[in-house]
Length: 564
Ligand code: FES
Image (cartoon, rainbow, N blue to C red; front, side, top):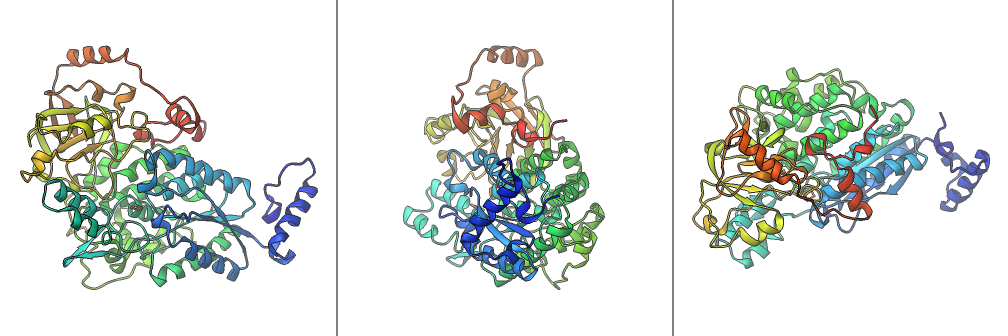
């Protein structure tokens, strides 16, 4: 197979001319023939002025390049799309698949013998792993790393679990706008990703569990000197991988995905990670079995005491030993024979775990944070293909609950009515949001954390059962049923819930049900069948709407998955 500069030549009908032209142009950058004869390591540069979670990427690229040069390779950085959660309209999830396609095609189009994927903010590592799963180029992930914690009036803060907590206090009339503005300078005090166990942290940890990132990659703080050294080591490793692999196909196997799902339960990780893992596995033709994931959660408890389910932050997790230490705790539930990028297997990776006497952040199986894993998969007449609840971050008393449905038809309806003083809503009701799924919400926005209606928030109500076909931020908390599949916009049963219907949530039995007779449900579904939906008529939005799959299939595009 062609290597280095000979790889993927532009097609003019004369390969030697293609190589001649390529060399003539690249020499404009001052490269020598000796430099151009080395293995080429691509470095995906996702820096962007719109992405503070990637604010350290320039520094990381420089260190990766140093590592590549030290190992005898030629580093070639190239830009790809960068996505930040708060700067992506209509939602970052709408752009994840586009970023994965951009990353895949740029790796395919440009000559490189291996690639370092620098990602961090929620959708970026998933997009890069989806790309890696689709190519035959050795790939290694380098996360940007978590922010350091913030401080406010003697409290330690973390974006964005505390963003939501303080905003809820503001909605309840307990925090004025002057304090809210002060908090905008305290919640995200450094560059890097959210420092709680949100989606970014979950996906960085999962990259380690999959064996596609070096030990410590997920948890070294973004601004710590160790992250620069890690970047250098990642460059060195990528150069070795250019010659000996492993290929993504060697790493992203059913056993590795099983390890990742097990780690996700023990981490108290983000519900979004389940969608992303389904998409990444789907790119390799592997189906994630939601019921098997639920079974893992019955055996593997949450061991990591991090917000939003626990107390601590990513820097604490790192100083307690990070992912190698966690995986050592759950080694009995893992397949340790899976290969890892640095060479050897997950058994070697786990053997390198550091012992930190007295640390309180990574618990043992005998002393877990919660008795079960972080997530449960629900089924029932409202969710024939499944729904997810992060019960580790829910109110225990609400996990078995029956209540009256208060229905919002879409996000516009929610924002127009949720704070209306005339809204007929009580604390024991169940808030329902529909048309917020992959198609109906144009990318399944993180709207599943429905705000508590102001009039209840002011009475001190801080949690209610909320159900939707949306996602929620991994940094959020509450008794929230998400990813109801199929979504209402494609005729899922959520579409036929009416105000005042009774709904029963029973997490112990893994059920979410609308309490009406089957024939009434069938009649309502028939009534819905004639309703047409407005769809985008051009561009990426039209492609997205036509091709996006449901949450249980990772919201990937059908055509991006391998043909059976
Ligand atoms: Fe980027 Fe939280 S907003 S990781």
